Structure formats: structure tokens, C-alpha cells
Length: 452
Image 1 (cartoon, one colour):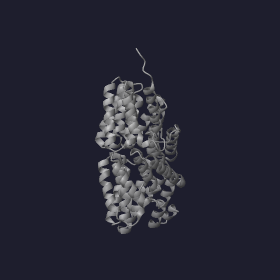
Image 2: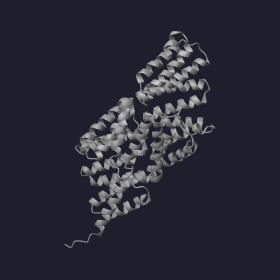
Image 3: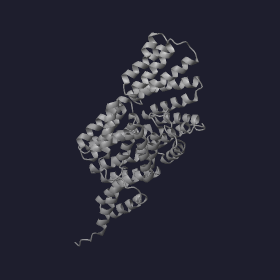
Image 4: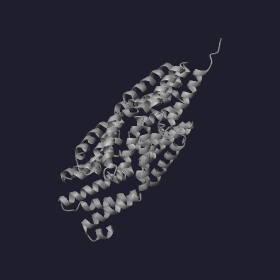
């Protein structure tokens, strides 16, 4: 149809047809075809008479370029950011609030995935001022979500949870809420997963499990590949921190494999790289160190190629931990580099995790005293962030260090205190390990003293 209209010289109708053909090609993952259609539409726009109608169509074109680039090139690609920046300028020129919100959300995502949290925070505040007082609840929560995500990644879990709760009150009863403002079909999937990850850190495991289960149900109901990949990525994050249900030790490996397969099948390079990282994490936890190192290297290379810096310090730390099994000095160097990058980008939510991993490598290097000092520092960070789940991860390692230095009683008391908020909640991989460690420490305490 577009070809016939184009040949007939019907510029406006042909433009709309090319745009529709591009969206259809994108939906079936014909990304190269979709780009070709957009370029045909762009050529028609160049001969369109100047006026508000031309600018409005130009706005539609920029959104189409941005959405296509996000999928084909990744969130962090310069082409993605440029398209959304142009879309925002056009929206402001046309005095279109809805367009400005959509473009602002796209631009926020671009800077966020690049690890540019300060810039993302400024854009989130812009989105908040644009959306908060709008009558449509499916839009008014958008700024709250963006603001909450920045707070979460900065390590302010309490503020993030408050923003997510307020956003959820707006989104919860609306199908496809925020669908024009996120990179997924239904904004509830993004919100619920971010909220679940935050609640995990805050130690509210039961609520986190329920929200992530709801996100998965929504994603599966839509069946849209990009939304499904997003949801799998969030599940992998939770499983990587041992927040998944106990007794399902293969969940991370399975979800990481499915995530990478989705990326390969539909041409999502960001999720290919992310799938490699999470698969490496799964291999490392199974003791398959060589495979883990290879996957981490592939995943990190993929992130570098895409310009995606978000969570790269964490991924480097996991890589360093795996590398340390055969090269402790090399692993420690990777950790030190990760900590430098972490300090540079202000991504504080994984501060305690990086320190915990560094402590483990120091212990393997025979530096037990320094390892204990670093672990205590990690616990102080998690406590300051009101993150009992992260503190429990550090506390489990510290209890093991105390056992090795003939202080099992101190380790048992520490773990008992840290475990208390989780005793009556859904058991996770981490809390199951803590419970086993406590049983072992109690057994040591009950052993009779051996006379000399």
C-alpha cells in the first residue's frame, strides 16, 4: 500500500502507510525492514510543506526512530537518545504535553542505562513536574516511577519504595498503564518489578514475591517479547541476590538462558548481553568457574559495545569473584576497578555487595583481618541504607569469618539478630542458607569441651 501511495505522489497518505508498515515490521522483529520503511517516510517528510501538520508528523517519526533504535541498538545508543531529544523539542514546540512526557521518559531511559544517574535524576524531576497533577492515573504515575528508579539505584530504598507505592496506587487498576512511556507494553510490569527489587532489599520478602509474581502474570498475558525479556531480567536480578524461593536452585540458569534466547530470537542486543551476565552468575554459583568467566567476559563486552554502563560495577564484581577462584590478584584488581566506577557513577544500591565480594577475595588471599574489616564496613553501608536483606548477605559471610577465627558464638549472635525479621517470611535461597548456618553454629556451641 505504501509503495502504491508513494508512486502516486500522495505524500501524506504514503507517509502514514510507511509509518504503519514500520510498526508492523517492528512487531514481528523485522528491525532492518522497519528502519527502511522509516527512512522512506523521512524522505517524504522532507518534501512536505512547512506547517504544524508537518511538525506533528515529524514528531511521530522521531518517536518511531527512538522506539526502533531502543530495541535494535539498545537504550544507551546515541541514536536512541538523539531521537527522543528531537521528539521532546518538537513536543514542546507543538505544546503537546503527552508528547513531551513520552519523549522525556525515553530520554530518561537513555541516560539511565548509560549509568548517568545525575542526568537521569534531573530528567525524572522534569517528568514528575509534567505528570504528577494530570487527571489520567495511567500517566500521572510515570514521573513517580522514574524518580523511584533513580532513588533505588542510588541506594535510597525507602524513598524509592514510597514513590513506587504512590505510582502503584495510580497504575494498579489500569491495563497497559504507562504503555506510551516505558520500553514495555504495560508499565505495570516495570513498576512491579522495580518495586519488588526494592522491597527485597528492605527485607519485605513476602510483598516482593507477590509483586514479582503479579508482574510475571501480566507479562505472560501480553506475550509481547520485549516485555517478557524485561520481566525475565528482573527475575534474574532477584535470583542473583538469592532472593528467589528456596528449593529452586536452577531458576537463575533457566531464566538467564531464556532471556538470552529471547534476545537472539528477536534481536534485542541489550538482553543478549544481560543474559550472558546472569548465565555467568548461575555458572559461578554452581562452581563451573571457567564457563562463568567466559560468559561474564561476553556480557561485559556486550555492555561496552552498547555503551550501557548501568550496573556494570556489579557485573564486574561478579566477574572478579569468579576470576578469583583461579587468579586472586586478578579478581581483586577487577573489584578495585569496579569500586572506582561505582564511586564515579553514584550507583549506591550495590555498595555493600561489592564490598562483600571484595572481602571474600581478601579472605581467599589470606588477609582474614582485612576481610573482616571490609565485611563490617559492608554491613554498615547496608544498615545505613535500611536494607536488612543486603545486611544479612554480609552478615552470613562475617559469621563464617568469625567461625574460622574461633568466635562462633559471636557469629551466631550476629546472624540470629539479622535473621529475626525474616524468620516468619517466605524462605529464600539466602534465608535457607542462613538458617543452615545457624543450625551449624548452634551445634558447635552444644559440643562438649574436650579436656586437654
